[in-house]
Image 1: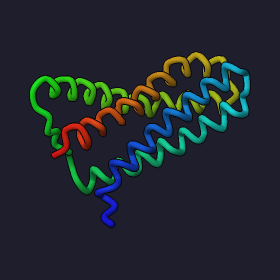
Image 2: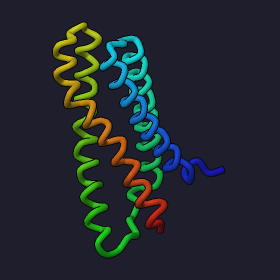
Image 3: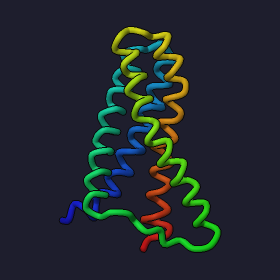
Length: 141
C-alpha cells in the first residue's frame, strides 16, 4: 500500500478527532473538570501534531493538489482554503502561547487567550476536513 494515497484520509480523521477532543475539552472545563479538560487538550495537541507531520510529509512528496471543481464552487472552495491557511499559520503560536500559560499556572491569561484560541483551532480543524471533502470526494481529480 502506498502511504501517500491514504495520507489525506488519515489527515482528515486526525483533524476531526482533534476537533472532537477540543469540543470535549470545552465541555469539561465548563463543568469545572480540569483533569478531563487537560487530558482532552493534551490529546488534541498530540493528534494535531501528528496531523501536521503527516501534512508536511504528504505535501513534500506531492506538492500542491489541484482543485477540480468548476463554476460557483471554485470561489467557495478557495475562500474556505484561504481562511484555513491563514488561520492555520496563526493558530500554531496561539496554541503554544495558550499552552504555555497553562503550564506556568497563569490560568487567567490561559483562559483569556483560550477564548480566542479554541474556536479558531476548531475552525482550522473543521475547515481542513471541508477542504479535504471538496478536493478528494466531491470534486476529485
